[in-house]
Amino acid sequence: MLSDKIKHEIEHEAAMFERRSGACIDALRIVQRERGWVDDQSVKDVAALLEMTPDEVDSVATFYNLILRRPVGRHVIRICTSVSCWLMGLEPMLAHLEKTLGIGLGQTTADGRFTLIPNQCLGTCDHAPAFMIDDDLHRDLDPEKLDAILANYK
Amino acid sequence: MSEKPLTERIRPDGAPVTLSEYEQAGGYQAARKALGGMAPKEVMQAVKDSGLRGRGGAGFPTGVKWSFVPEGPHPKYLVVNGDEMEPGTFKDRLLLEGDPHLLIEGVILSSYAIGADVAYIFLRGEYLLAERRMKEAIAAAYARGYLGKHIFGSDYNLELYVHMSGGRYICGEETALLNALEGKRGNPRTKPPFPQISGLWGKPSIVNNVETLCNLPGILVKGADWFKGLSRTPNGGTKLFGVSGKVRNPGLWELPLGVSVREVIEECAGGMRDGVSLRGIIPGGASTDFLTEEHMDVALDYETVAQVGSRLGTGTMIVMDDKTCPVGMVRNLIQFFAVESCGWCTPCRDGLPWIEKTLGAIDTGKGQMSDLAMLDEHVKWLGPGMTFCALAPGAMAPLGSALKYYREDFERHIREQRCPWK
Image (cartoon, rainbow over all chains, first blue to last red; front, side, top):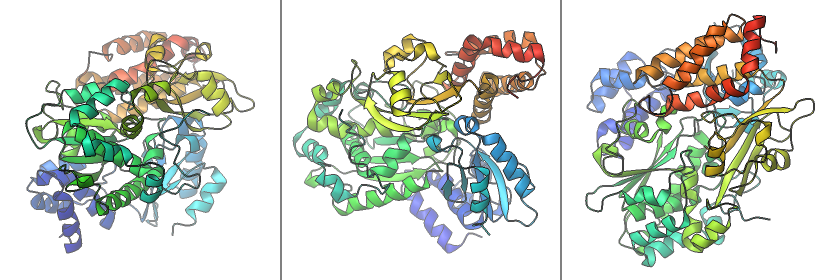
């Protein structure tokens, strides 16, 4: 079940649109912010709230890169894999990250601490390479800096 | 020192320009002037006279775009395209985070000109700092009576909301953006009808890029002649130009349109880093054709870049150095487009993964000479006019131009059955 807080936030978004279904992506983002990912029950609950079918909501949830339909770790690392970061040393960075965490792209560490996901260009190309951890943008990365940053996310 | 109307207020410490700072620097004068005595048509005419062209990549004249909105039906919508997802592009982020009231004033002017009742700012899902700052600035503008009912004491009402995207490159295409804003999958729509007639929820709508709208306050206060004088070419105004890649000083600068590639790369970005030299430039984001060192003196405006076979695009250049493998770089670009294809039309959905696999084979020493002919064919069959929207043709721009300028590098990979850069 969606909490009253989540429902209230979704209603706030729905009021901005001519039709309630306009708030579908907002609703999925709100659910994910609270729970880390969007489970099947939440898809049904959002559908009921926005007068849509669960399949309609799921067609939206599975289309967008930032909506996660599988469980993730406590912290989600979104590493920019686009061209400017690639030019500036993505591959050694990614290799270091995968070795340090012991996981590949799309995987979660055994202790549930980190999930590693590729992300499209983060729009900070003059400070490449870059990644986001949760809501935080980290730029001008190198392997040493990376270790220090990871230590801040328990 | 040339004028920098887009960025002159932006603070060096990275904090956003506040409402009072913006007003002290002359902000909201244009909105007061327009709403205090100009008819919407006069605002539209002022923008037409300035020659302002869209800064999102396509370069369509902004005032002309507005003029297709019919007068009658309401509601009408203005949508701000802040879905900056083109690889190598980082220009709108600066405006959104640095001077949010400049964008709000641009939104007010554009909305007033087309008679919009509601405006949405469609932001990239990852631009969380921009989201916070825009929302704070919008709240401050509402509190001062600059948004909402009877703004600036006039009869004009405008609501302004921020929507955060779920994240797909195709949402930068304006009809896909409208579907996304309606809470649907971001597939592009058939045109016609164009959004000006049937846009958001079938209502007349205009989609304008962030940087485009940020040009409006200056145009309204200082006029078309001033705006044209900012530029070195017949295209009016300044433009945000960026450089990423192995230059000494990657960054973003506001410069007159018509500045040369050389000036941006050598003077602003400090030239190439020690030990590398320049081999190629993608001038305006991932979907524009490569230029090479022979194009260093090309003037960066819409027509001149097109004359040498590329596009000004977003104005943010990606520099390729001689220690970087062109095949690997194009493979990275095509990977992006293949993942981001919305899947709606066959050439794009099936063609891009085929190209990606073929480039992967060539890059890892498993290519055949016949692959190059196949790639050439795809450049043709996924090109302009062959697909539902501009995504696949955009992807073919760096591929087609790389096959032209760096063909010997592709052939060497195949002959030697390895990547010579590894």
